[in-house]
Image 1 (tube, rainbow, N blue to C red):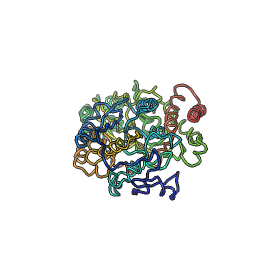
Image 2: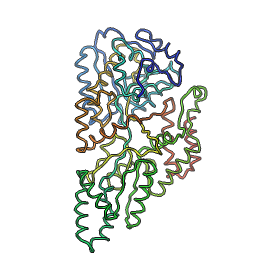
Image 3: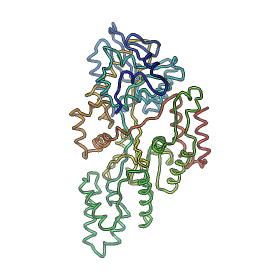
Image 4: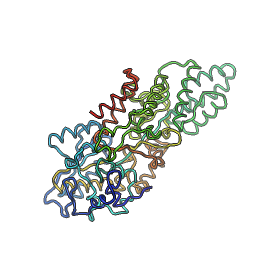
Length: 514
């Protein structure tokens, strides 16, 4: 684990030398520009409204609303946080923010993703609409001391320093990753090919064996099936040479699984719509596999300052070869992505029993619940021996309102939001991970994890805990969101539009650099 320090928070990294970082790492009272504001020592003479823009649905704001209400009570007459939903998803939130900013409307703080925040900073730091937060972090009275900084999970805090300009530009709200959802009954033997095999082999010749299979299968076919019931069916199926499957750990094992399922269905003449393996996010698929395979995607360094087109490094033979691997699997009927399905989510196939194993966001776990079978979780299969998982989930940025009291209120609210008890409650409510190490030691978190097996939302929390050390992010800059969007489209362009892989890459690169 990389421990945080005040120097780390000043952005020592790919854009700066230690000496320049030291000179810009300032304590309270030495901010030098509009984007480096200071927190006033006093409070406003009348109540200041702190507008927080978000995109959360009503079902995801219960604890957030409680936190806001308590903050407003604690700071009554000084600061009042107002929750404003400006869109229904993160992409729409980004579009709405850009539109409102162009019209001169500015929030105090906003949730979102670093790709979006990079655009609010712009290529000219002096035109940044959001604030660099190092002065607030280092403020002697209202900032974080070293022990408090060390409480943040390293990867979450460091994400806020991975922008086109040095320093800290965002703070983590709560985080998620990808997880694999699989049909527990299907893997254990509750699948059509196995039913046909057992009927053909035992129904007339050995009815006792067949009836035992049916008893075990019915017990394992419920959404409330226990691990013991699934294991019993698995062991019976294995002992009788039926069709059962092991959960894949690596990419190669996942591909083999998909091909085995297709072959087994063909052997038993099973028809109907069924694609064994699904991956919801085309962008996450490519970005994570590129990282695991050492394939360049995007870069952000001193060279890209003079040559912005150099940000986009994904046009290379290795990337094209992987896209061919994916699109060939799709054409085989082994694999599907949201892009190959015409923007239809793979969870729709999964919950309908038309897929066995799909990869999706932990934040979207509720969409992978099925009333027809037991949903189980596994880590996303990785390439070779390189475990890397996409880190997702919103962060918070503060906008320049030219009013130090708005900035102070927004910062105090973030600190309230990110406190141990509040952040634990906020994250768990939405099947996300809290941002502080101390959150994982709270009774609330431990009790939540102890309920694993009772509901998928509890299982998610237990499953993501071992993954933190393997989280990865991509560099963010003006245009990084475009790169993500264009790499996402490549699957659909090749599979559905008939575009060649070479041409699909050319079109993606041209849209990034135009």
